Image 1: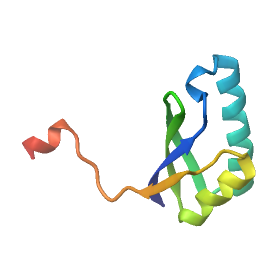
Image 2 (image 1 turned 90 degrees about the horizontal axis):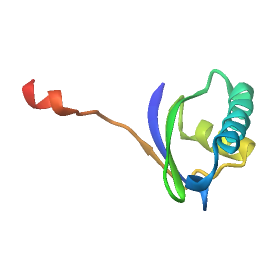
Image 3 (image 1 turned 90 degrees about the vertical axis):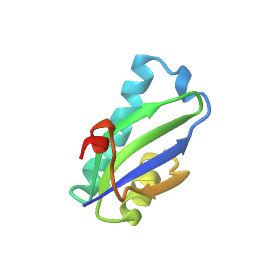
Image 4 (image 1 turned 45 degrees about the vertical axis):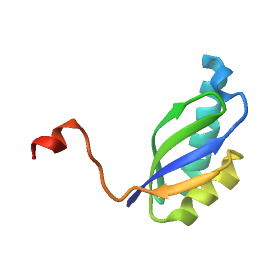
Length: 91
């Protein structure tokens, strides 16, 4: 599985309350259940008008299919080719 960062442009998403975010997660989980095991949701970061989601998927097409089924746009999909963090400087 490849790792992807998905940027979703969703106006006002940062203003949603806990129940609304719970509903959005349930909608996403429903789409994921239809696509398993081709795509997995790792986590998402919610900002003012966007979410930034980390997914594992067989390919970019699986992410597009999740977006279609869930109704959440996949505005930008970027494959992660490496990771660094503060400990990288010590390697």
